[in-house]
Each structure stands twice: as C-alpha cells, then as structure tokens.
Amino acid sequence: MVDEKLPELIDHLGWRLWRAARLWKAEFDSRMNARGLSWYTEGRASMIAQIGDNGIRQSGLVRRLGLTKQAVQQIIDELATEEIVSRRPDPSDNRGRIIALTPKGIAAAHAANEVKREIEAAQRQQLGTARFDALMDTLRDLAPDAGEDSA
Image 1 (cartoon, rainbow, N blue to C red):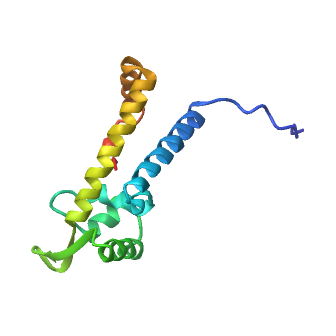
Image 2: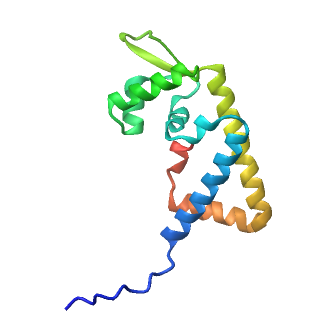
Image 3: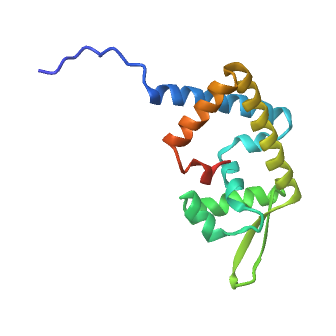
C-alpha cells in the first residue's frame, strides 16, 4: 500500500544551489537593467559567451547551444537588428557566415563581467574571503567543466 501522506521535504544540495542561483540571477538582472542592458538578462544573451574574439560559424552556435538552426537564426536576427552581433562571410566557406560581436556587444560583455565582479565582491564580503574561496573551490569540484560555458 502506498502512503498517501506527503513526506517531509528534505533540505538538500540541489535546493540550496537552485535558490542561490536564483538569487544571484535576480541581482545580476537588476544591475544589468540599471545599466540599460535589459536584453542581457534574457536567455539569448547566453549566445554572447559562445561567440569569442574571432567570431563563430552559425553552425557552431547551433552545436554549442543545443538549439535548432531556426532558433539560433531567430536569435541572431534579433541581436543583429539591435546591432549586438554582425554577420560576415566565412572566408573558408562561401555559403557560411561568421557571427561576431559588434562594439556594442563587446561593451555589453564587459559590463556583464563588471556586474559579476561586483556581485562576487559583495558575496565575498558577506561570507568572508576564506569561506567564499572554499565555496568556489567546492563548486569547481562539483562542476569541473562549468568554465567552458560561462556567460
């Protein structure tokens, strides 16, 4: 027989990580909005970290983001309209395009890094340097490849 009473919900790592991530994201969004960069708080901004200094083929974005060609095309169209990214011919493939950040896109990425540093400084002050560093070391151990997709 199945017990129909809801069990006591446990406090667990997943819950704590999720809550911490939500609080961090809310602070990030607030600070980016204050800088007039509300678009950077949207999911499409995750594309920015994938582009790199020399740009990337559109097909590379499809692979890295795990989205459909159509979804990536739509995001690129939106970001290009807002002059955050540009398209240029791929010198190695006449049919292909390289997606690159514009000066506006680069400036937004710099602003996002500034905001991330500000949030980390506040959290470091809240926790103390030793606890903050230990937390970062622990998170790196739990998610060793997270640096590849940082945004």
